[in-house]
Structure formats: structure tokens, C-alpha cells
Length: 135
View (cartoon, rainbow, N blue to C red):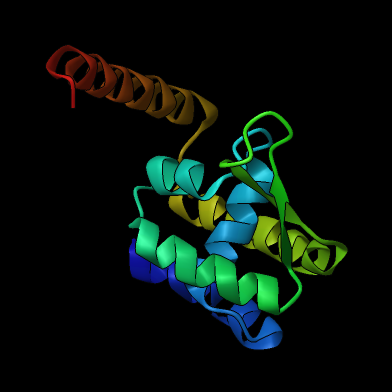
């Protein structure tokens, strides 16, 4: 599934001269308002902070991102997409939609709803267990 996902984004990476990881960061920031730090990305996407740091640096140099210091906690740095990222965001959202359509092909609305419900329960169980165990 990962290979299929990355294949969907290959053309975007080539067109904008960015890596898959960089596309993922742009898409994450665009799709998750309020989660705008490198720590947020690392935790929610389960990607090593070192990969995030390297990709963020490259995206800043390429003009897709800027750093903004938190007004109340100067140690916290927020990441903000620039206007240059808009075409990447639009392309990524289209590719994400196409990917979902591929995955759910041949399924009716009830099957998709059941899948989503089961997935929610699985994630809820995992979260409860990690909370209990302090993971």
C-alpha cells in the first residue's frame, strides 16, 4: 500500500523537485490546522524527528515553509506554509482523493462506513492501551 501511495505522488515530487517526505509534510500541515510543529508531525505521522528536521530545512530553503516563534513560548516553533506551497497542496489533495478512491473501489457506502467504524474502534483500543501503560 505504501508503494501505491508513493507512486501516486511521484509526479508531484518530480514537478516540484521535492521528496515524498516533503510532500507528506506539506500535506500534513495543510490538512491538520493547529498541528503545526515538527513535534506534531513526528508524533501524528510516526516519522522520526530527524527526517522531519531535514525535510523542514529543505522546504524552508525552497520557500514552501517559514518558521514562526510562539508568542508565549519562544522555545516552540510553528511551521507555516507559504503561498508557494498552494499548488503542491492542491495536487496532493487530488492525489489523496484518487488514492482513497482506489482503496475503496468496489465497496458500497455501508461497507465503507463499517470499515471506518471498525478502524475507529481499533485506534480507540490502541489509544486506551497506550494511555494505561504510559506508552
